[in-house]
Structure formats: C-alpha cells, structure tokens
Length: 229
Image (cartoon, rainbow, N blue to C red; front, side, top):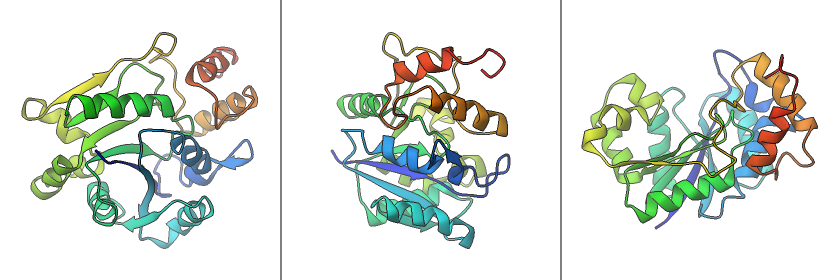
C-alpha cells in the first residue's frame, strides 16, 4: 500500500499571516515541518501542496530547496488541492500534515499509517498526543468520493470533517498515544503570536528540534515558565 504524505501550506493565514515562513531557531517553520515529516518511515513520498497564488511562491522555494515535490492548486478548496496532488502522485492512502506544526512527530505518523493499513480504515488519527504533533491518514478513494459529492465549504477546507460528520458511513480508527506521550494538554502548534514566542523558547531547550523525540519535546515544554505554557 502506497502512503503519500501531503504537507498543506498557504501563506494567507487569517490569524498569523505568513507563519509558515517565520523563523524558528534559524529555520523556517515550514523547513522544520518538512524535515520531521521526511523522518517518517511509513511514508513512501512527501509532497508539499500549496496554492497557485503568487503570495505562495516562497512556499515553493522552500520545497525546491529541500528537494521535495511541490504541487500548486486551489487556495481555499484544500480538498481539490489534494486531488491535484493525487493526480500527479497516485497513492492508496494520504497522510495530512499541516505546515503550522513544526513538531510533527514522525513516530506518531508511522503509528497512524500502520494502524490505517493493517485495519483497512477509511480514516485514522493520532489520539491524546500533544496538539500539533500528530497527523491523520485517509483512504484516497474516499477523499475522491468526498471531493466529488460534497459541496459544503467546511468539508472542502478541513478534509477530516466529512469523515467525522459521516462516521457511520465509514471506518474510523483512533490511534492511542504511547506511555509518556499522552498529553493532550500540551500544544506545539502555531496559530498566534503567543504560540510563536512559546515555540521559540521551546526550540532553545532542545539539542536538535528537527530530530527530538516527542517525549523530549514534552519534557522541554514542561520546563517552560508557567506563564508561557
């Protein structure tokens, strides 16, 4: 079974515009997402999916510099963008990785992939790990069906919502966290300026933010001043 990792990225974030290209310890957020995604052993390929808008040219430059394929598609219809990627790089399953998660955990990605493949699921997601460290997997044929049949904007912008809204019509599996990683109270995603300040402090506590284990990230998070967390 071929598994394709898709890093979805656009610069026009409403809360923190341009966040994917902001600096985090000497590398952009996006570079760190790509570096950690490439560590996942169960992904046959990783592709960067961005929009056709000129404002996303910088995203393309990062992908090219890191030698991963870049596919450009619709700005707001994320699901259509995924279909454009799948047309260029066919796969049985897709793992969604978002460009605002610089601590995406490759071990969790692999765990989700294995459960997704072993159980023949339509949708699988990592449960209870820190917010922003996980990823979710989708059967490509089901994504195509949703793309073809659903016109709801929320289904097309947030591709997991159709599966959650129609949980009786598809097979869904949650992948539990390992001991020491079950910390849903921890957030390592980037959504606001406050998040960026916290992540910049977090990076300073790690020997190598691109290779640090999830447990190491959690320990570093716990050592941050309470006012920052």
